[in-house]
Length: 147
Image (cartoon, rainbow, N blue to C red; front, top):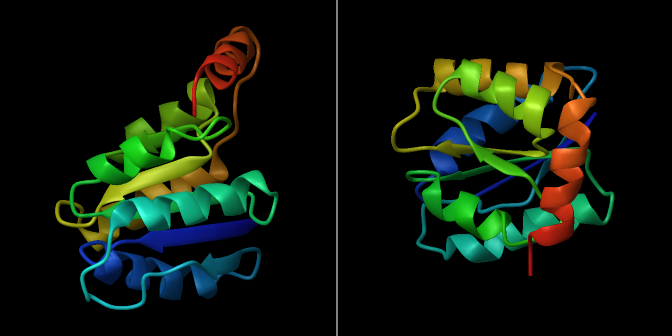
């Protein structure tokens, strides 16, 4: 599975830790789309970069991180075909995959401990989409949403 990650400066420390952790997993190819330091940057650029990467088929899923997760979530969900879920605990990541077919996990680097982030990422990558009655809802969101 190809996983793209991107963050702003506030999310960089958590992103860097997740990149290192995921890189040690044989079944995962990690694509780090930046930023690469804590120097101030604008989160919409990095959200857009990841979303375009995902929509072009260059990665299978994405992970975005800013301080709260709110800005990245708002920016990502402007793209038709992106279903970004801001998750605060693993159960949210579970339902984001099962019922919403989330293709982008958003984390708040300023309020998420690394051990918790790793568990949410594990759930996000391992859990399937249930389809069925949820498929029409997801298709409707993709059809109506985005710029």
